[in-house]
Amino acid sequence: MTQTSPFGMPTQIIDLGHSRVPYYRIGRGPDLLFIHGWPLHSATFRHVVPLLADTFTCHLFDLPGTGDSEWGEQSKISLSDHARSVRQIVDQLGLTQYAVLAHDSGAVIARLAAADDARVQGLVLGNTEIAGYRAWQIRLFLLTERIPFGAQLFGLSLRLHAVRHSSLAYGGCFKDPNFAEGEFRGLFLDPLLRSRRRFLGQRRLLQSFDMNVIDTLGEVEARIRAPVHFVWGAEDPFFPLAKLKLTLAHFGGGASLSVIPTAKLFAHEDFPKQFVGEARAFLLRCIAQRTAAVSA
Image: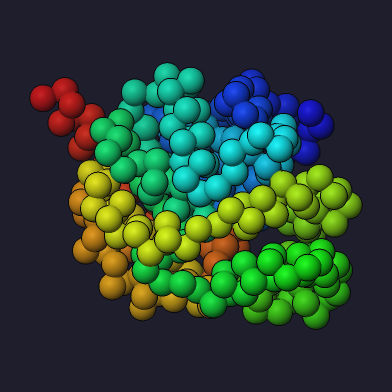
């Protein structure tokens, strides 16, 4: 396993049976589990964790097929599989009460994993798939995956500045797409362009992506008893704010919303201080409430 994480060497390697994933433990305080989106890995939280590690014990890992994970043909890589892997990680870590911070497809995985789990104290979710809403960009990615050599051609096209800065790529993720040309590119894009294996690992989620999971998210959300708080980039072209607002009533434990006006899909990357500012008070409040309820 090579070291590519800004968090240094892993605290340990967690064996899931079908895959082995690097795990990082940073900070002290109540347990906070981070779940990254696609096509990223745990380093996407590199600017968020330092702002939270003085208050929370931050638990991070690369999902199977991403980052420095070790995976193979037998590895289970789908949204539902990832949710089962997250539960397995939580069990192996022995977490009895924990909160979750997730974004993008990671926030789908977080919802699937949190449903019916009484250990979850609260969830902060960044811009993510919306129950019942089939984003045209995702449908296009899935179509590209099914066209012969479509995924390879799309990968090659990301070498072009105009494609990277388009709304289908990083122009839809960041207020200023130039954000993706520096540290972000070195951590996430260049490894995919240089390594066929890393590219294939990220493709595996697309190859198994099931839109029915998105269609039925409302049923899953009703089974989440912990409170949920969305921190949303208002200018996200993938997952519209107006669509999200229609789903807030789905959540069994209630859902609230904060909006970062000029942010897009990766608000936690683009505006980490604002993102954490919106998340911290909520996390502390819901952890205190759940801890008091358990004590009572």
